[in-house]
Length: 207
Image 1: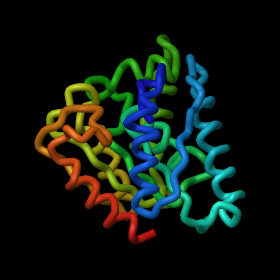
Image 2 (image 1 turned 90 degrees about the vertical axis):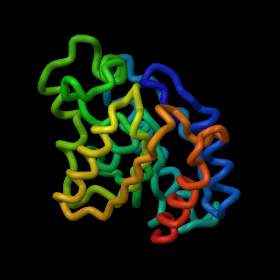
Image 3 (image 1 turned 180 degrees about the vertical axis):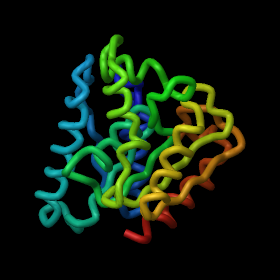
């Protein structure tokens, strides 16, 4: 779930999303990660540990350990994408909903980086956590889903990440919906909910 790195939208971007995935044949767990409070490594450590746990218990829980991916929304999308770029413990794939990606001025979601890095973070820290700069050929295949009219996290965040993925030869797909703003997750009132669910299920069939 997202929440700007200062709380968790653990319902509609966590438990509700996991139930929907489970209803469609995908084992899902919800990560209740710790808030960073300026200690940027803390949420990522939790995500890495979650991936390890899911892989260690794959046989017991009935799925393929090599196919454990990650889903993230908004700041949770930044966390998910950081595991796919910065971490050694990488997921097999990523699905990112309207993710926070860049700390570049004029394009960033300021509060996410304030809570992740601290209010007086340096230009070097901003570069290190601008994830479009951390993409490599080892970054896992990624599906990006967002709205063109997002007023919270500028859509350019997803576009920068998609372009970086393609420059590095990483399989990726992006869907930009005309409306919806930010934070729609699995809310039934989102106009394009059936479309994104179909795109996500079709994309997951590759894995």
